[in-house]
Length: 144
Image (cartoon, rainbow, N blue to C red):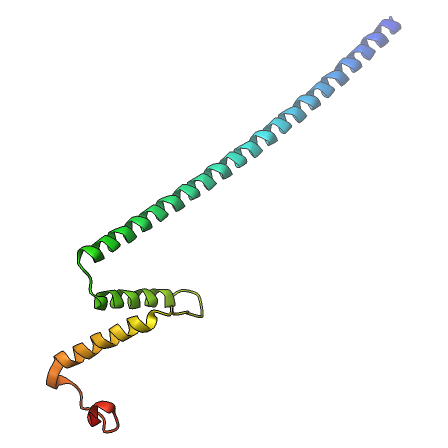
């Protein structure tokens, strides 16, 4: 009777140990599968986020290109004079100067544009007539 009881207790202990072992294995496999699925989810989210940003950049570039094309067509359709082009050029330089750069390089042809702007200013001053402020004694206009 004691032998049978000892054998039953031994089998119960073995069965209990095997049950704990199986439970630990299943828990570890579940944690591993959960970690893998979480990593795959983060990876897929990162891929989709990058694709979304790329598509947004493409759409912005297309819109900018279309705006430039429309402006180009409008300038040519309106038969813009050098004066209008000079003004647009200066507006663009103003936008460039507002950027984070601390140095601005003017292209060589800027002197031609600036002389056109000077002609526009001169024409505007001449068209104002007598409302022009008095010239200083030392200025070239007062002598001329």
